[in-house]
Length: 167
Image 1 (tube, rainbow, N blue to C red):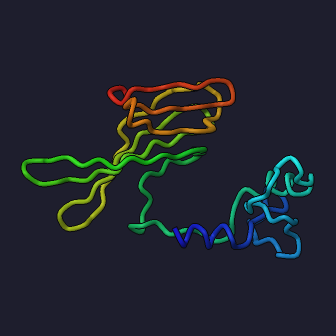
Image 2: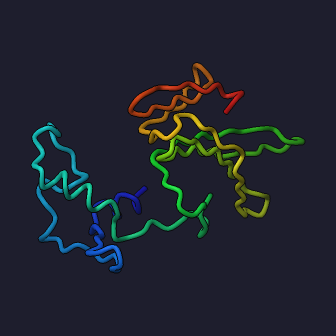
């Protein structure tokens, strides 16, 4: 988590034109209050801050993958939200731990990805399913409800509940 916090406290990236390279933004060009910092009332944020946030969606420094490889990669896919669940199962007398990722997209789909480690500590992951939850509506929020054994997914227009047996 420290690496993630460091990245968000670092420099932003910008692209002058669509054919330009992405370069770091000079600190003097970042508006106050700095995007990403907590404020008492977001309605009082100046337009300069809001416009900066819209035009600078990337940070300059990357956060390294835990295992030096991504858990899942698909080209031209924009994830908008992520929730993670840890599951433990007894497999032939061995305790196995699985990490289940539910990744929402800008097109209203949820990708269900599972990751696990073998006895030597090597990580493996596989895409289990893709759910078309809020077609053509970006997923804005997701949560796992252990009480209801379901995944809750929200877009700007609707909220859906997917039972764990289906997800």
